[in-house]
Length: 389
Image 1 (tube, rainbow, N blue to C red):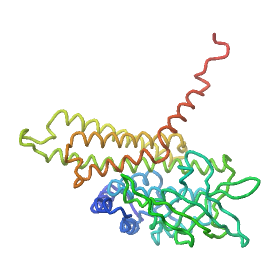
Image 2 (image 1 turned 60 degrees about the horizontal axis):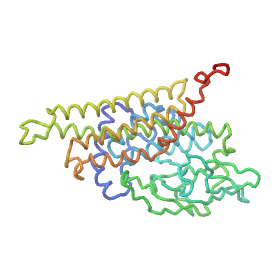
Image 3 (image 1 turned 120 degrees about the vertical axis):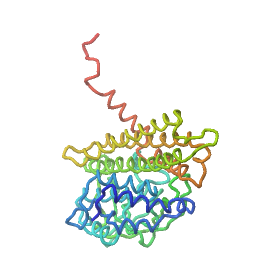
Image 4 (image 1 turned 90 degrees about the vertical axis):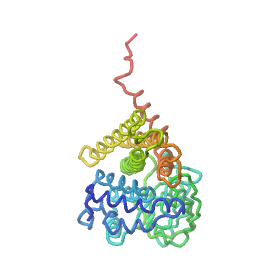
C-alpha cells in the first residue's frame, strides 16, 4: 500500500525528474517509471483494500498525479488515465474489475482507454466511433478500427476500447477490454508533438482483434441514462486528474524559477534577481494562479469523494481553469528568466511545452464555456416573466 504523504510524494517526484529530460529528447515512454510506481504501490492507490490496494479516493489520486506529473509529465498522464479507467471499471460493477484491479496491484499492470479516432477526433465532442465490434459465431467479438493518441502504447497492458456494434436496427456503443498483446493490434509510431514527447501517444490499428464474450463491459444506446452515468464517472475523474497533472507541471516550473531567481546575481545588479520588485510582482502573480489551482482541485476532489459528489460540469470547469492557469504561470516564468528559461539544458521550456498540451486535452475550453453559457441563459429564475412589459 502507498501512503501519499508529502515526504513520499517529494521523493517520488525527484526520482522521476532525474531522467525526465532524457525521455523528452529520446521520445520513448519511460517504462522504468512504471516499475517505480509499481514498487511503491502507486498503481493500486485507488483499488479497494479488499482487492489489495490502498483504497484511496480522488483527492489522494489527484495529489499523486500532481507529484508524478511534476516529476515526469508523460508518466503522470498515463497514471491519471489508469486511475480514470479503474474508476470506470469499478462503476460498471464488471466481473472483470476484481481481476484487473488485482493485476494492477500485484503485477503492475496499467490500463488506458482507446477512444479518440482520426476522423471523429475526441470522443468528448460526440459522434459515433467508426471502430466496429461484431459478434462472432463463437459468442465472442471481433473489433476493427483505428484509434488515435493512444497514450502509453507499448506499455499499457489492457485497453478499454470505445466501439459501436454493427446491429442493423440499433447500433449500440460500449467499452471492450482488449489485451494489448492481442493478435491484430499494430502500433503506428505517429506521435511527434511539441509537448509530452515521451507519452508514446501513437496511433493503434485494430484489424480483426478477437476477444471473448465477457470482454464487453457494457453496451448502451447513445444518449441513454446508462451511457450518461458512465460518461459522468469518466468526466469527473478525467477533469480533476488532468487538472492535477498540469498543475503539477506548472509547480515544477515554478520551483525551478524560484531557485534560478535566488541564485542568479547579474554583475550589473550586484544582488540576486529575487530582489527586483518587478520580478517579485511576477512571482506573486504566479503564486496567485497556483493558489487558485490548489483550492479548485482540493475542493473538487473532496466533493467527489463525499456523498454529495461532483458534477461533470464542475469537473470540466476545474480542468479548464487550472490548465489555463498553468500555461499562464509558466509563460510568466519564461518572461522573467530570459535566455535561461528557453535553454533546453534547463527544464522550464519543457514544462511550458508540456502544459500547452493541456489545452488540447478534452474537455476543451470552447465546449466548457458554451455549456456554462447555455446553462446560465436557460436559468428560468433569470428570464423575464411572461407578464413583464
